[in-house]
Structures are given as structure tokens and as C-alpha cells.
Length: 140
Image 1 (tube, one colour):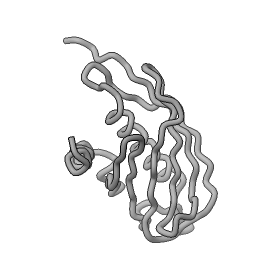
Image 2 (cartoon, one colour; image 1 turned 90 degrees about the vertical axis):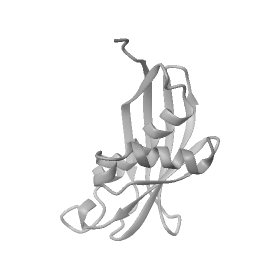
Image 3 (cartoon, helix red, strand yellow; image 1 turned 135 degrees about the vertical axis):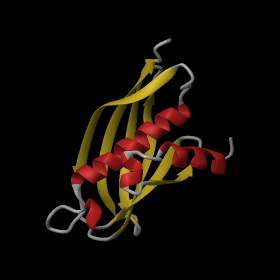
């Protein structure tokens, strides 16, 4: 598939999910990365008006899990997140944040992702590490 087809498939995956609720949009893909963006609006704010860390973690797990799905053979496997760790380094009140997932480890069973969440000026907002697992699909 070409880039546009891959991003279209990612958009289709988001229908009626948390990703759609948070307005997460997959915007770029390469041979070893996937990038998504999320608008920072009151919908994803903490009570004091800055981006909620949980929304950042949801963005990170969404892009990392989608990347595992894209870069692994998922015909016989499903992908699940099994561990996530986030360091929130800078707050943001408005605009967009961008999450770029790149492999640290691409194993047959487990995958380790580095996910940088940045603002439009490329300031690091959060640094996230995500572990995903490929589980065999149950045969019916």
C-alpha cells in the first residue's frame, strides 16, 4: 500500500473509537514510524486548562498500537498494549500535539516503542515508552 492508502486505513480504524472521540488523526507514515496529531482543546484539558496527561497517554498508545498493527503481520495476530510509561515534560493549553512512534525493539512477540509527543514548534511535551504484544488470533 502507498502512504495515502495506509493513512486512509488508519482513519477507518478510528471510527467509533476513543481515537475519534479525541479527534486523533494519523498524518504521516514511513518505513519505521507512524505519526498522529491531536488537537488540544477543552475536551482534553485538565480542570486548570492544560493538556491532560491521560489524553497524552491515550494518544501515545493509539499511535504505538496502530504502528504495531501496520508494521507486523496481523493476519494471524492481534496487537495489545501491555505496558506504558510516560514522562510529561511541558504543558500546553491550545494548538495541536504530534505523536511519533518509532521502534526500539521489533520482536515477533513483543515490541517496544519510543513515542515523542511534541507541539507545533517541536517542543517535547511528553516522552512515552510503550510495549505491545502480538497475540495469536483465536480460530473460530
